[in-house]
Length: 185
Image (tube, rainbow, N blue to C red; front, side, top):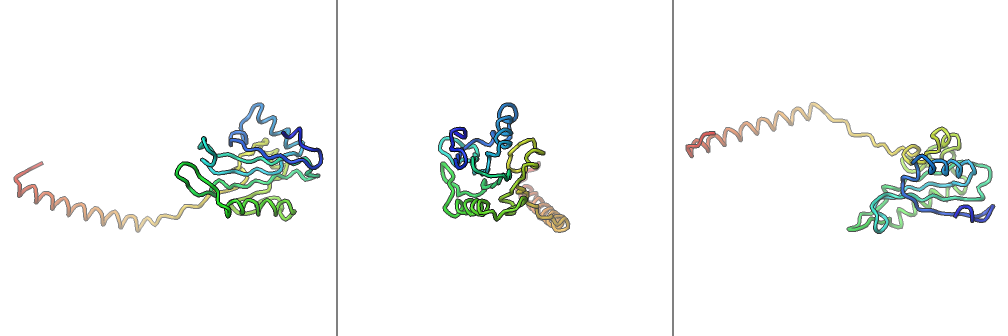
């Protein structure tokens, strides 16, 4: 598809399974060549169970044969942007709109390399892609790590002590009932 796109202005969008983004071997060589030839423009991570008949997450690769000199690649992680469905997830207009908004800002030249939108989009340079051996796994570029809430150990210990006290009272009550019934365990 990329080969048949018009030189200088042809564009291609391809939906792929996530494995295509990071598997080695011949897929890795193809990825590297597409990036070195400055054809890959955008990688968009999609939610799991979005497409009928498959539950795996997918990605959209956008290729552009008229990119000019810049070799940056935009990564958008829309994998959490969906509404759950009974048999299949779906993306609402608002969620799709967020992807489109970031894409338009990138195309308008409003994005500098680095974090474009925290925990959502990242513009990687060719050097970064090369350092990562042309691995396009989205979490390598878009940091979605969420800090966990700190646990107040004093409160937890107090709660355990309280529950142990209640348990002891219930055990005593149960022993009383068993004695009334002349049952011993």
